[in-house]
Length: 347
Image (cartoon, helix red, strand yellow):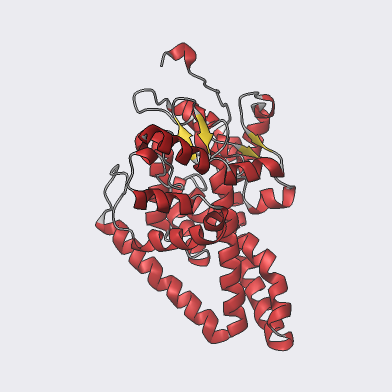
């Protein structure tokens, strides 16, 4: 690919205007305080009025579990929340405790996703596994069956979070062979798992209602997170991102290979701006709470090549139709289309 055919959006911002340690700590402390107070309310309401009334707090608790995840393992893992590594590690581990996410190991793999996103070799790294048509055609029937199951809405909505939760704690190798799991990473996973089991055990000991509401809220937050993460890269303009290694160009893949999801203001606050995923992938050193400002200041809204998720129909299409990547057409095809072509080619 020649330079003149590459697409690149230049993003400008003043680092001093978009990041503040004081404000970052305010967001961290606020999120933890609301989490703790909500758990206390769930406990009291559950004890006095029963589980049904305690479940009224599920939406709030689910939202702030997502907030803890984005502020902590995600933003602190990128080193974008604070100006020092020490502050990012402290806040990241604190917030990771509440959203049941191993800070060090998850953030390391996620940073690899950023570094290699869009490379053919790295499709699915830190993301839902993605196959090209050729890869699918040449796979064994068992791999094709598993891939088809993974690409159904049932898996995306209910089974993918469980699969991700298990992999996040038990997987000890990189399936894309792009990096090695270190002893520190394995130990971090082990210690995090011990602390998370202790948290859940403590909730169960305090109140069964509290334990149930927390687990339900956690799972709902994971489902929402998986859906949002899925559509941020599995969209119709993904051809800007999916390139062979020799044609891969980071500014193009990062910005145009990611989508911008329009959300209501409340959800945008809870998700800490992660819906501005094009800005986040372009420069992960920008804290989530400043992504909207950078998006507006650089007039990204009027970029005709930026993929905008602004309707329910686009969400549904990403979840149900964008299954296998056709390199020749540089577009998505469905599983049924893929199977039809595979059988036709085999004759």
